[in-house]
Amino acid sequence: MESLFSSKGIKIGDKVRLSKGVVVYEGILMPSAGKREADSVVLKLPSGYNIGIVFGRGDTVERTPEQPKSAERRAAASFDKNKPQLTLIATGGTVASKIDYRTGGVSAAVDADSLLATVPELAKMANMKLVSPFMKMSEDMQSDDWKVLATEAANALNSGSEGVIITHGTDALGYTAAALSFMLKTPKPVVLTGSQKSIDRGSSDTAMNMICSAIAATSEMAEVGVCMHGTMNDDYCLFIRGTRVRKMNTVRRDAFRPVNDLPLAKIWPDGRIQRIHPEHARRGTGKALADTKFESKVALLKAYPGSDPSVMDFLVKKGIRGFVIEGMGLGHVPVNTEKSWLPSVKAAVQSGIPVVVCSQTIYGRVNEHVYSNLRALFHDAHAIGGEDMLAETAYVKLGWVLGHTKSMDKAREMMLANCAGEISDRTLPDTFLY
Image (tube, rainbow, N blue to C red; front, side, top):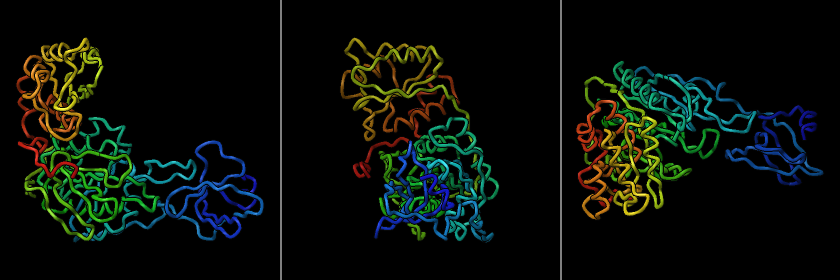
């Protein structure tokens, strides 16, 4: 096939027309992910999906007159200075990804200008300032990156921006949202958003997520939250508090849901906002503050039948300063077994290392008053109950708490206090599977 393409002046990334009798395919020529068969062709169709085609006798292929334009060659959007000023902090992820025609893969290689060119509607909504402190996929994020984002957001808000939008990969979006919820004291909205489908696909959710995020960022809801699709269709987005949001599906457009809480609002791309949560902070006039003290030596562990608690002892020797354990059901860990977790938890606490227990059921809350095994974990080993916090939120919160105190009593007090909407007095029935 390579010699055929060469003779016709066709190269990877060109738009081609392949005819198999009366059936005609048009798409962008892609390389194969592996070793391509000599008679096969891979095309990216207008829908954004790839198709492999066996090229046989009598089939034809030609380069079309119209060729794809790269994002880099698109005209830059122009802004109306009379519109509300927003700051877009671009960090990477699928929302800022595009197809690399040399490899056939998707990479986080689009800068903030290219992302904005992909969603020109933003120019009609706000006077957008672009900032890109780094570009990385969300699974590569660390606590130092959260500190940078908190500082950048505070600086933007204190420099005249009415709100901040942060584009971010979806896999670890919940962790960053929780971190910024604790690190930022903000009188204005800070909205994190991403995309489940890259911008080269016809089914991409990038544009609507960005548009709804801009609406949230200019609203009266002065919260740190995540704004993503609320349904599989382009109906509306949900704006969800940063300490209560979780990615619940690997690929669905509506993967992000509130846990043990209601969303703050539904937001339609035409500008409509339906506030759902009975309580949310309202826009004010004070200064934004970035409180970025953080202890990164915190571990998140999962208890399961037969799990070995010696992993805790090992991590203590490695210098871990705090633990969050995802317990079973109401927060249970193995107790009456040869691999009891009680001695390891008790030893860690006696060494000044707080141990917080949440539930791996995701919904519901830890309750120490039901079963004797759990009473032993809290009353004998002195673990801290994580109430109805998500385990990943508790993990981030513990790192933030330990950045502010080394006192076990103070750490316990702060972990049990509702600092950023992460704990509720009681869980309402209509928050389940919202």
